[in-house]
Amino acid sequence: IDRIAPHYRRMRALTLRLKPCPAAEILIAATALDVPILKDTELAFLPELMHSFAPFTMPAGWVARQETNALTGSAIGLTYANHVSESMHEPHPFITEAESVLTAVDAQQDALLKRNEEYVHLDFLVNRASSLWG
Image 1: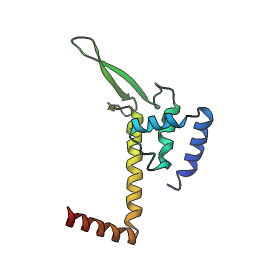
Image 2: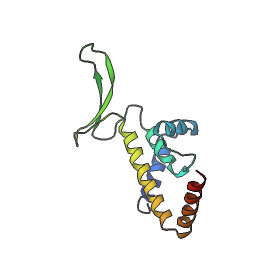
Image 3: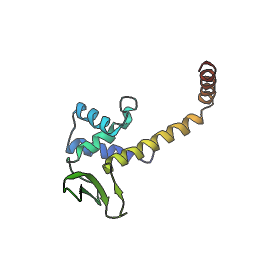
Image 4: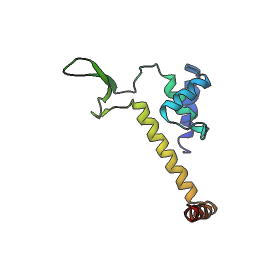
């Protein structure tokens, strides 16, 4: 996290300068991405950054494809293809990216908490009490 922080600060400053986002729009984007910014305010950069892109802007190497029903010709939905990895995604690549960042943040938080003896002891007591009362 320490090595990412300077890059994040520069990226956030650039995002805010190029296209500032009202707080309400950041909250809406956070909800759509399942980013818990009310619990972890440090994660607000994810929806803010993703919202700052034009509505249909794709990350480098990605393209959106409209899927159609072969029989009726009607639109089914969008899939996203990466030309570099040749992978296909149903959710928008930004959602996939947000999920990977959240997973990494959760893992880092869990690792830090598990190194704290007081937390480990309290966690044991809470889980023991829950099993006795549950």
